[in-house]
Amino acid sequence: MRQLAMTVHPGSEDGLSCGQVLWGTDAANDAIGIAWDWAEVNHGVVAMVDPMTLASNVVLVASDDSRLVSEEQLLEMHWAIHRFDWQTEIATRISGLCEAA
Image (tube, rainbow, N blue to C red; front, side):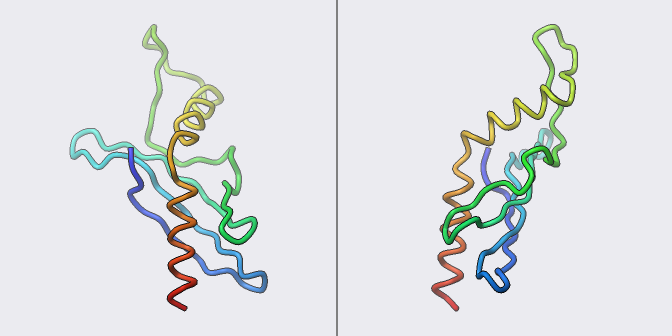
């Protein structure tokens, strides 16, 4: 999976940015994605706004082909997100926007 889209909303008084990010695949027949809101908690340091709120078209199933309940799906998606380098990519983009300003 890779980053497919990102929005960045410049910070207000505190100068800290926020936005949304979408990671997934862009395969024509099997496109999947996971999106979440993020916020800069310190300059160059980003975190999920609400880890309990993900938007996704992913449906995960157990080894017996039963659909995982929402809590299990959320946990598994977080394990995947933990492996993405999303924070570095956002911090790099924010840094680039600050240098351009």
